[in-house]
Image 1 (tube, rainbow, N blue to C red):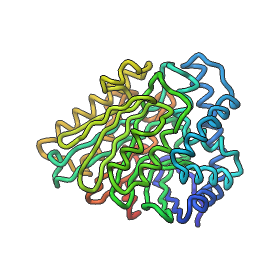
Image 2: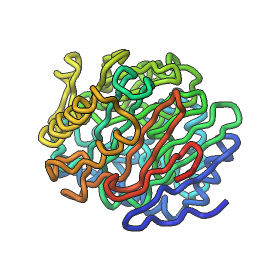
Image 3: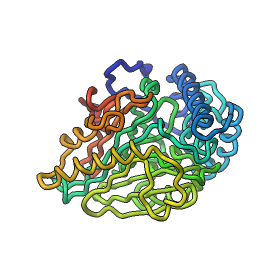
Image 4: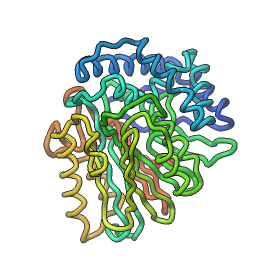
Length: 371
């Protein structure tokens, strides 16, 4: 298997194919990406410590982060044994302790626990949408999102295609040494997430483990149940769909969730709480960025609604640079960039990805790996 190469200024999607048991896949992943995993862990550690201090007013160190990871690991193992086994095997292949790989995977949630209730004015964010068939040209659901995080994380983004021995094959945009993030499985279950900041963050199951288990499901009900029944560590919005054009939007804090069937029209979510049930738990969020991106994405979708949305048109939403630092496509504003984007139409099936700025990069058909 070829080694993963570093991305350039306008990167193309990198692919890593894994097959076998969780142990086999994890060890290969860890071995191939060992040096990058070590680098990425150090960057993620630095982020967690600085965010806890700057935004939560707490002075923490690596020991605090890893102790929290150790507390979360047994809960995650009980929730998804196969995923936790893969994480442990990635750690073995990368020659790192399991708690470091866990912390690297679940940093968003663990950081929220460490910096309880702090504002995130310089934090990353994502802009997501679901457009049902009554809005699309061919009548098939389309959904997707941007993925915004620290600009210096850009070289560590890649597409991982897994062929587990006893579960559906998956294809996801993620980062080196990490479980599933945004993608689809061969049964047509498609899924993504945006971060929400809630004050009930606690030791629990991290969001990547939730997604990884959900994408191991063979039907939408089982996939969405993985989200709602998990003892979640932090707040996230999850959106899911299947090949029958059924979609659900699930807005979560650590302890509460609100599930919405999206059977027609559109649903847009960025990084602020919209569900009334969760609003009392919302911490300070980057309101100017999140609300501006939300409104802009709504405007673009509504403007196209009458003529019909297709995948090519949807690409332009994620390329949009209107509003500068608060744009959907962000180019190193405050150290944050759009590191990639994904568009999915599970009934087709279609899974389009871009690594780097959607306004500058190359979209790839990740399911069949062709440009």
